[in-house]
Length: 615
Image 1 (cartoon, helix red, strand yellow):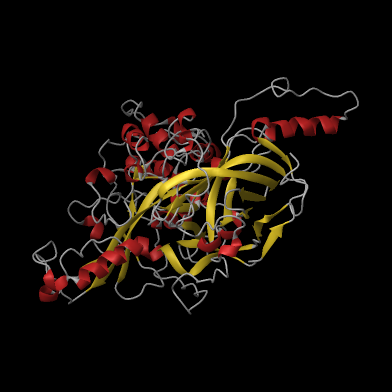
Image 2 (image 1 turned 135 degrees about the horizontal axis):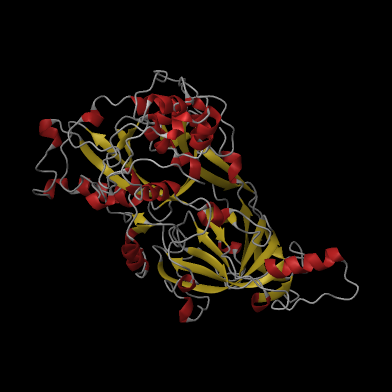
């Protein structure tokens, strides 16, 4: 047999339509940051592309004991599960509140600003606050956000002296830099100057992990702060397997076990986003132009590895209204192009873009007009290649990037001679020297609430994982274990035995709460068959309802085995369905998935995210 069975301070009310066009410090800084900072030495100068790793002989049909999963004609052979497992009756979605997560990491700035609207008109008398001892004033100001500190500093000289103190601005910087103690302001003269230089961007290293909707594969990015250079930078997280052995399972010689020893690294040669201190200070009059808005305007990024003609701009986003997001969640893939997709719990969602369709100019409703409208859970990057002095083939301006975009560009170049007037014909780059945008795309990134990937004693498998997908290589997953309703020992059927020690009884009580509830594996990066943001497998119940047994055969001796459902599809996420599979709970840091119909077992390992957030 296969198995043997914070309190905030008050401040003046912010107008509802106040443009985000003023410096966060309100008053001019007493000193400026260094004009330039030493450049980081590139980790490797050999290539600007992600490393290409051979997949060994994983494309051979001998890698599968029963059905070759890499043959496009074969995914239909394993028997599909009943229709209720079909796509977009999202498993358990009806039992979860939409876009709500309980936790301490919710957006506090919006709560503070809405709370300020209850304030009455300012009193004409001198505030007793300034008469308090300095220690009490600093204690009160220590509860304020950076925006409120800047507001307080503009009220009077006495409070300006307190609010401009580096004691408070060091705290504001440190709150957005997890995993390391900030020891200095880097190239800046003060922490206040440092915070002002990266105003609007501190949420990036604070949430540290970001995943995107680019094509079907997506991308996982870690954003961190380099305090030596005062730089915020984000790099793609990549993984390759050091072990590519194949062996037959002793319990069933028709089943192949794929060896898996992943090596996870940041692709330091090619930053996805990068903001230096001087970039935030060099406005060059752009912010003072008519109609300027610091929240809605794009922020150019000067990447260290940028080749000639390649450009990237950073855009802040605005959350979708709950009604609009809910309507999109009710549709089928791609869910109205919102991000993140409905499989991933989120505080709010934003408009995304469909792979293969350029989004050159998002609608005004997608762009925030004031600070209170800015999402700290998502952002966009618009990137393109620019050519000067070359006639623009009609239809190429604004084409999407990535694989789909390159196909469109090549198609357009091949048929230029036969095309008539079009959007680019009105602005021919060859005749006037106007730059032509080729391969333009807008990529939307979203973060994950720490509650989703932080393990607990009763939810030990929560986290970011990397899995083996054979010919597709390594892919990153979010393993989510939704919270269960509290239960008593009696409801779990637990009764203390007569000779059971206290330690044995407590362990059995803990096991009863660990092995219950649902486990979802959601792709953060995908492949041409099952894309990012979709379930890859689901175990409906880790408890008695899904229990299969305890494995007694090597190399899984002692692992608990539960029923699961594996998600498969043809290329392009066509004809997707769930098939029978089993999940082996080897340890809190390692899992295995037995794809019954395909006759192979693949492994998954936890990614230690904190290993990558300190430069």
